[in-house]
Image 1 (cartoon, one colour):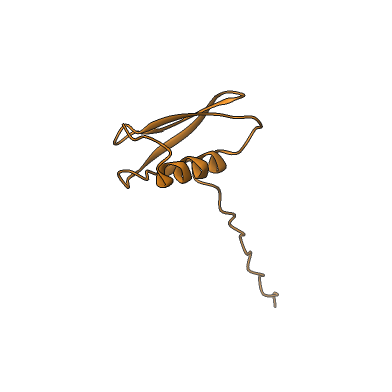
Image 2 (tube, one colour):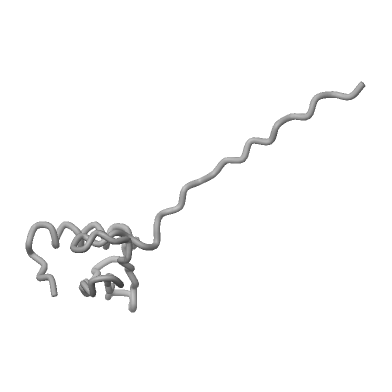
Length: 80
């Protein structure tokens, strides 16, 4: 007689996305790239919306994207 095998439970951790949705065209094509330690470039591959953001402190890309969307939706950012 053998004993019953124990089921292995795998824990799946979600990762933050690397490509975001565009506030102008709605497609998931916005990429945030940090070129230097104080300059971030946000660009949409579909509609061509782009923005460069100066950074005082290092931030994760999701925070940079959220600031970009806030500026776009409030009208402080010009769409090209």
